[in-house]
Length: 192
Picture (cartoon, rainbow, N blue to C red):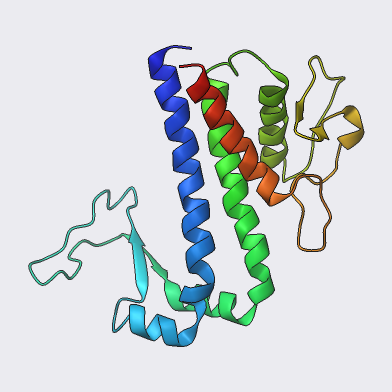
């Protein structure tokens, strides 16, 4: 593995892990109405995003946005939904973890999955399942072993849910998905 590949893969893992931690620490707290009023006072009730029509957000000397045609995501409806549906935060965490797995899987895919070890084959199938609606899509017999820890992927998983939901349906626990990222990071660092 080249030093550039190594750095790119390590950065992808760090970039994927950070939003999971931020989400885990922040979503429930920010959803509480009292916390929202304290931390998001006045007109700080939205997040703005660039668009094709507004590729940069500009502010005036008073810090008010002077750009137009940006996307304005109002926070109150989303945070109210979280506050009213606290059990849904498990599903929301699953979205962040799936995004992290997809991001890291894309980085390893760009690197050709390197040595095609059982753990990297496992990552390849996990990435594919995320991309297919959180369900395994194994159209033909496996060419290489795909395993991580006590998990082993086989054709029998075709159509099964990848990540467990709050009812316990699914193959992979959230913590094991994150442990896969840790394993990949330490594996890359040990091959430096």
